[in-house]
Length: 146
Figure 1 (tube, rainbow, N blue to C red):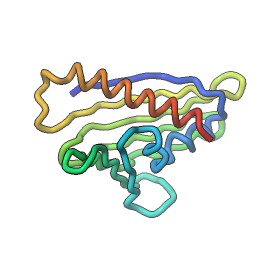
Figure 2 (figure 1 turned 180 degrees about the vertical axis):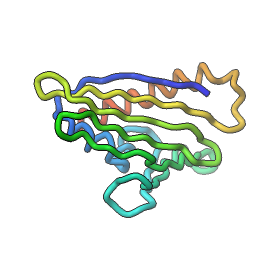
Figure 3 (figure 1 turned 90 degrees about the vertical axis):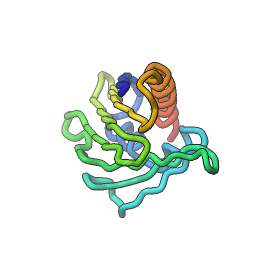
């Protein structure tokens, strides 16, 4: 079960970085061949569920996620969102932290543990590398687009 972690600094206030990173439908713009469907009514909170469907036709996989911790940044404190992956194929968790940084910027910490059911652990290094690249690209895209 590979775990990835990376950090980004964004020239955005923490509240704006948070808004961009937790706007689930926008993740579809950042991840190729992916559609996002939010299953629960807005606003996002603990208990919000959504599905990221990635792939084409019969080669698509659903990544079903539930927000289990929702603490937006406020009053100079960091925000933290934890997602549990509850699909039949994609399992694990993700955490997105948004910290206030100097000069009104934000520091983002993204951690993710990913497991693909039926994929032997021999593929963990490739899965880790691909996940690091994919989620890093997604974070960069989300933080750079209004």
